[in-house]
Amino acid sequence: MDKLIIEGGNPLHGEIRVSGAKNAALPILLACILPEGPVNLSRVPRLRDIHTTLKLLDILGCETSFEGNEVKSTVCNIQTEAPYDLVKTMRASVLCLGPLLALKGEAKVALPGGCAIGARPVDLHLTAFEKMGATFELDSGYIYGHCKKLKGANIHFDFPTVGGTENVLMAASIAEGETIIENAAREPEVVDLAEFLIACGARITGHGTSIIRVEGVSSLKGCDYTVMPDRIEAGTYMVAAALTDGELEILDCPFQELDAVVYKLREMGVWINEDNDRVIVRRQGELTGVDITTQPFPGFPTDMQAQLMTLMCLANGAGTIEEKIFENRFMHVQELVRMGANIKLKGRTAMIRGVDKLTGAPVMASDLRASASLVVAALAAEGETEVQRIYHLDRGYEQLEKKFSAVGAKIRREKE
Ligand code: UD1
Image 1: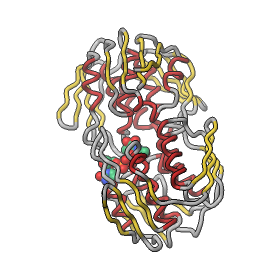
Image 2: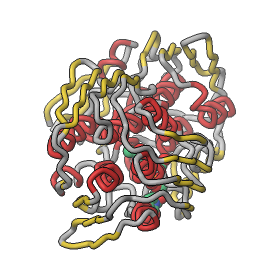
Image 3: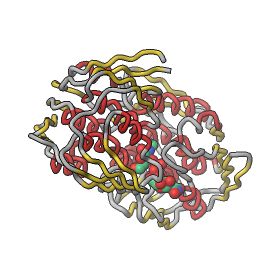
Image 4: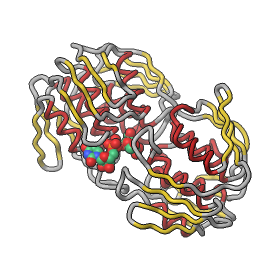
């Protein structure tokens, strides 16, 4: 297992480029099961979760190649079983359920277990497919889904689930008739998936709003498509620039998709300027604490909560973060406290009181975004921090230590 050793206190300066969005690339890759012709995808980040998805595609009967950031995929002979070994390492594997049901009328997909940040059930996905005519049995840890031909339906999600919306969107593209998804997730990654499906010939309107309409077509064709840049990675760089009192020019930054984050960062005293294709970020005087509540898009993203908390650790005064999406997403709190932060937890709310400095310490990464918050904390801390169990980080950030080194961080990877 690898760990990162970070010598803090070096302001970051220079250009840093954002990679393709993991959370857009994953559903788009699984949607490659659907088209009859070959798909060429660009800006696919080289991450552990992407390799896991390619393994799953291989098992499901897609032939893929991955060179640089390009994935080529061709459907050969579709199989319908997603084994537990893969699903347990990456919950997003459950996104093959919709395409398989729509294409083959059956699917056997391991039920994802809980994860560090909460129980994360898939009941909303299953209820939606039931409305479209599928039936399910749960046996020995697997979901067995069956249907004759998936039919369009009116679906109203109780909660705007990102994965649920994506799963239904893929299935509805080749289902019989029209599907209307109400209270759909509006996340940019859902929009990117919809655009990909449209490029393959799907008939989708309303993506990016809470009502999406899909007119099923008999088949999809292959296409060339470029995955959107990662808004959470870009947001993490904004926090790193402010935390280290440096200045970063963020290239390929999906600025429009970061509204809520930019708004809160500016409220804290961070200077952010969009200039053509680059976004420049630096601190403007003292930082102040703010109150944040995580919400579905366009609200403040839960995936940026941990990084903003780290920034608030070094702000003047107090701030709060209320986590409304996941029930257990504060695993980074005790690790930040080990670095000298003053944070108190009450239920789903964290109260952060700014301290003068953070100090380096051995800390443990617990999930993807928690890991990122510890890395940026370490960049600003006095002394050396050892971030252990960084395999979480490798699931979602492409070459993070290389990118940070190139802008002045003292950071290296070692075997634990
Ligand atoms: C996706 C993102 C993740 C992000 C999250 C919220 C991917 C691969 N992951 O996760 O990074 O943090 O959106 O923006 O894109 N829920 C149910 N039943 C369901 C589905 C969801 O109760 O059937 C609950 C979940 O437990 C959670 C909440 O709804 O509390 C949000 O989940 P959802 O929007 O589905 O997130 P994911 O798609 O899992």
